[in-house]
Length: 197
View 1: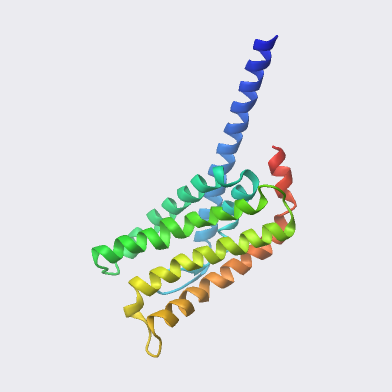
View 2 (view 1 turned 45 degrees about the horizontal axis):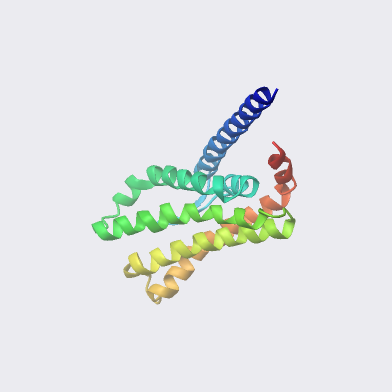
């Protein structure tokens, strides 16, 4: 009897992991599609998308950082592969090129998973909004640092590298984060239902 229970538990656990893996793969694909949809693109990278961060945030809110971090890293690699030819065409020095890839892609998209920390104990609207805002601001910080250190020389006339990076990256990251907050307002009630799956 005990052996049957153990076998049943292992099978259920395996099925739950498989469901999560499938859902995570779907969310990476959905986030990628939303990032490609018609959007407002900035000339040196960055864009206002159709809530492309939301699927990655949902994984983090539902399953926590344990699942959110690898999913966000996977998404960052997909974004990097989609844009690497464009970034390579900018004629950057090798150091700036690598720094850009790390800060603007790997770190910037990976920090989205931080939002899951806010719903580990309880899923409430204020926690979801705080998590969404924090993830957006951390991603903005990554782009800002990259802009300041690697692209400051490209600052428009009348701007210092600091003010240019603040303005340039804020012009797309703040609206993009605001869109994600609005979408999460509509979706947050689904999070507890997903957690039950």
